[in-house]
Length: 573
Image (tube, rainbow, N blue to C red):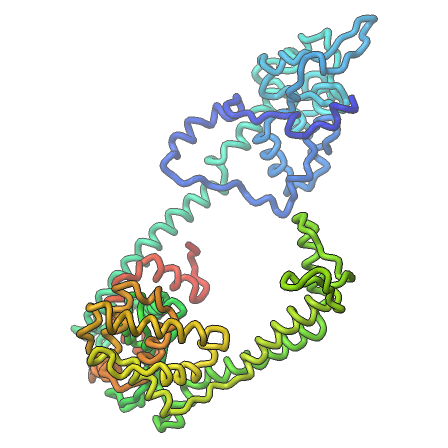
């Protein structure tokens, strides 16, 4: 018995895949095959893992909270009766009237297969159906034997048949209740769920149609509402009752797509201002970056109403986020310093636990440190703990702190000379490695002391390659052509640091037509008949209208998801 009790609980029951419990519900399941599966009602925070499936040790069903009983019953029925998969000789023997008798495992395959349970701990059998609905049938065949006490008169197999009884017996009534409990399609929960599913489907169809209409109106620059919305008006608008949230969702997803195209690479901002038709000062913000193909891209990122458009005002509108970013930098510096001064011990503790968990050797921090670059005969006076603490941990944090403290300080002349030396015109006749290196030093965050040497080596090979060897670079007209050609010929991978310099040079703010293009579109979207548009709605229409090629690739599902997440909706998708 001791060895049997140590077996896994999973060995003591089997799932009933096609039992008579589920057989009567199959027609309903087939009738609802086209509907999505409906989950069972919530367990109301009851932990089903605490259930004991040994029928001799489990808690009586009526001892559970009424709100938990049906959940427990379903779990027991889904798991099936507890039927240990043991060899016949493994069942314990009992002396009954002078004869040694034991439970016969063949009964599990008999007509009792769907309800008969065996308790290893008590060496008795029970009825699963009667246990689950014991409180409703107090006089079932055999009294309390098959639901509470347990039956072990192995010489009286006929008593199992007596327990089943006639079609209207207490046992069969309990079985019917179990079948009804599993017939989810007939439950109130299922009916409500189906009704809600139909309502959700109708809502989704309407919302998808609304998104399609918004797409058409935005891309064509058409009005959503008329300037006269009275009932007597003959032109109240194309889509009077559309929520502006869909327009905002279109703008948000367009910006997400632009940022995805940027892919976390370098960028610059182009900013200008103009009056709209209502005499409001509008500031256009254009994002300038290099895409994956080496093309210089300029995308309208936003249009913002500002109170005044002096240089100081425009600077404040842009630098507000930069100021917040600098605050985060200061926070990062403080946290790094605190981490350096106070967190070494806790770091070592966490790393040691990780190493122990994954069976990784933890060094002895009290031993003398032996460098792999020095002879073991010349031991260092420092210990292992000093090496990792001072020479590794503190040095890395000090380097990070120094990177944060270093401010960009550029000399305009060196910057312009460096850009001119990168220009490919006239077969790279203006190339000067010394001036290009000076330009690189103006970007300490991108070219530190560790890769400046690599940059100089790359420049030497790059100049020979593109000027003297590869004829595909012989007729380039400027930095834009150079960037595209480097990507097309895969040389941006051969000379990544040189390509980084080219991108930085291309991202310098210059006067382009992109901002003016935004102002032209602004007059088309916000005209005399639409002069009362709100700033958010105006921006929501203008960004996807101007960036049609990006907006066309935004899916309706993405717009709908953003629309749903903007604020609580009556219907959750």
